Image 1 (cartoon, helix red, strand yellow):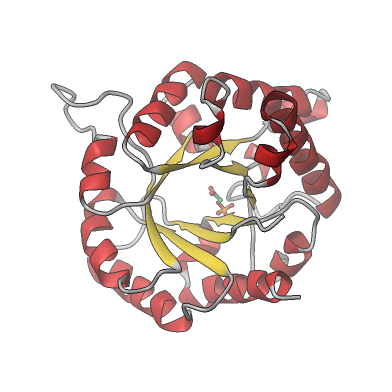
Image 2: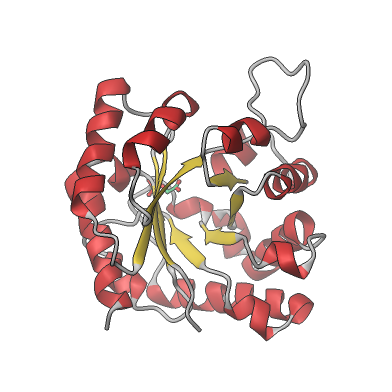
Length: 258
Ligand code: PGA
C-alpha cells in the first residue's frame, strides 16, 4: 500500500500574525518537493488565505482549516462555510477535534454534516476520533472509536471515504505530555482499518491515511512512526516551534524512505 504520509500541525488558537508567517516560512524552507512526507499547516481562520499563497509553489505543503460550518451559507454569525475555505485555496479541514467536541458541544450528527459540507466542496476532512481516559479504563475504547467512525463517516460512499484522512487522538493524550504507547496506537489503528474494511473493503481501507495525535514530540515521533498502520501525525503543541515540527517531519521522512 502506498498511503500518503502526512505530518499536520494544528496551531489551535495560538500565534499572532507575525509569528504565524514566520513559522510557515521556516517550515516551507525546510521541505523539498521530492520528499515523501506531505505537510499540512492548520492555522486559525484569519491566516488561511495568506498562508495558502505563502506556501506556494510547494506541492508537498497544504493548508487546513481547523473547523467549518455544518451549514452551506446564511445567517450564522461567526461561522465559516466549507465553500469559503475552498474558494481561498484551502485543501483540508479538521473535523471532530476533541476540543470542538468538548468545549463547543459538537456531537456526531453535526460532525457528519460538517463532513458532508467538506466533501461537497472538495475539501479533504481530517476526521478526529478518540476515547476519553474513562472509556479506556472501562475497556470501551475500541467501541467508542468505531461508533465515531460509523456515525460521522459511514454514510459516505466509497469514492468519498477514500479521500478522507483519519486522526486517532486519544483525548487523554492531547496536550498532556502523555502520548499513547506504541502498542496502544498499533491496536487502535488496526481496529480503525478493520472497521473501515468491514464496511468498504480492504482496498479502500488500505489506502486511507491514519494519523496519530496526542503529545507527539521530536523525542517520541520516530517510535510512533515505526508502528504499523501509522501514516503520520497530527501535532499540536510541538507544531508551534519550527525546530520541533521540522524534526517530526524529518522523523516521518526517515521512516517513509526506509
Ligand atoms: P498535542 O495536540 O500535540 O498538543 O497533544 C494534538 C492535537 O490536539 O491535535
